[in-house]
Image (cartoon, rainbow, N blue to C red; front, side, top):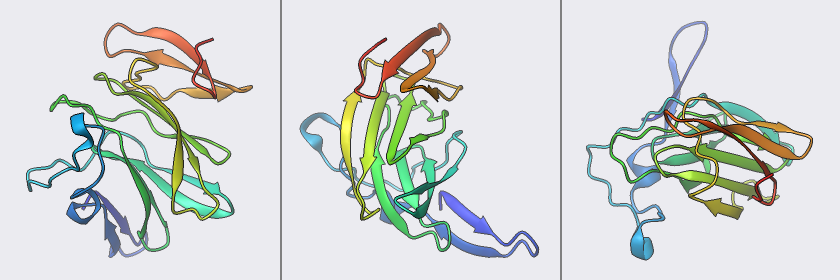
Length: 172
């Protein structure tokens, strides 16, 4: 399991989620849009801090895992939706946390992954991809900020530059 919830008082496992059933057969952005084939050798974890956000009146536990974003019901770990957001580089990581802007979720990662903005639909089970840009912001360890209609952050792994984008993905 990639995400596990524990009872704070007892340490007992409350639920486990995100594993083979989540990613086997998942749509990807691979050439030819081939679905992902689970091998059993996958790393599920990431460096990204989970985020709890209220979207359309429901709480979402948003976790940017190694393979991409998952939205879970924090009460029971049920998968609401997933979005493949992964570098083709085997040694890559997703480290910046998702940035929630109303009903939209901004993602960014290094290793030529780039950025994406998702708009969660009112059913809380699906989303539209507003944009996906592999050349845009590529954050590595730091999470971008949203301020006054713009997303700002450091882009790059070792050689970082300050970048800004509006919510349409246009550089500012």
